[in-house]
Image 1 (cartoon, helix red, strand yellow):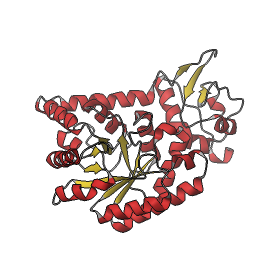
Image 2 (cartoon, one colour):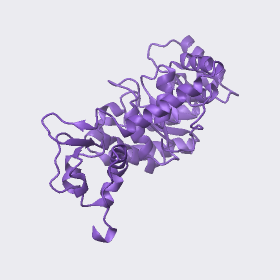
Image 3 (cartoon, one colour):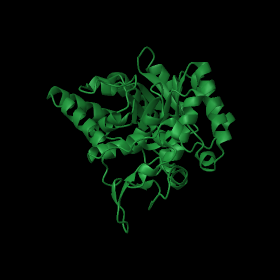
Image 4 (cartoon, one colour):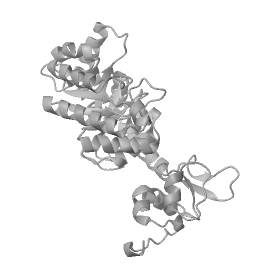
Length: 340
């Protein structure tokens, strides 16, 4: 795991620590006001980081949580992110007036997928500035289900440069939610000062701890009661640390050897190594006579022919070294900088 200021002691964890990183969510459009009130009481009882409610419910939640350490958060441009920038800025202003302390803003995926990076950068920068002026933290929702690894990296870089407090995987309304590999990628891309929020499809304790082990510093879920009660039960039985260590070990093994990522390709005679940050155009730029079958798959025999090691190290050295170490193979000699 990449060390951040939010990390737990890697050898131990408590139910209270788990509760402290949860944003308890009540965002379904059909949720009644009574359900919103119950969600706020749940968040208050378990001392979660925040309760995340719909924009129209912020003032209600703020009244219930007044004096509590649990803050009110809400969503901006939710769930599709295609609200105009001026509309998002107005939502942020209104949320602040109503008592909100954190906002989760959906970036515009259509603009990102269209390559309109100037729009994406300007919008994120404007929203970050507006939130910080009001004294609120802001999380940028990437909606990773729609993005390639390289687009996730680009969105993380843009968010970080703009001063965002967190990057977040998902709204929970797309085809898929948080994935471990995306959390690992986001954590590895961002500086330790930028938090990573995993959200979407996190409904039990094992999945929660898996996301935290992968680098998540916030968890968005509506299954808070189930998760914390399960954690407290295991804690009473002295088994919570055991599950935590199991999740750490699982993430470590997945990062080093993923059988879906490392192995032979159909129709190819040699083994291949997979790095999600590489694509055909990067391989063409970095390698001589490279052999690949699909995006990101590079020949173990040919990787030693990388010619631009300054770039290659930044992109995939950690993955390559992990693979070679696993197989007790010597890593290739990296030429001195003046030899490049």
